[in-house]
Image 1 (tube, helix red, strand yellow):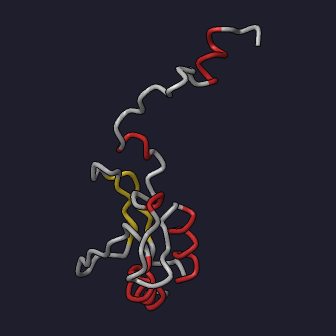
Image 2: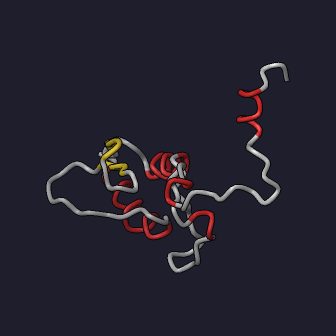
Length: 113
């Protein structure tokens, strides 16, 4: 069984990841549960058969930010990592000062471009 691998990940790697939390459920197989920022469950990934290296790779591919040390500061752009849809968390952007609409908008209005 690769459970010692999972245990090593839990004890040594999880503290390095921002927004990654360990919840211990006695008797349950270890799995990675991905939640939206509203805490809605998005996906469950069983970890029992994975090596520590594979789990780390998976977590980094999912966009979790890995700190140098557990107490290292997290750069501002990673505060909400791994949320890819950061703008939802921020207030809507005010129109830019020069009044330009986003390029995509232009294309829709002028198909000849």
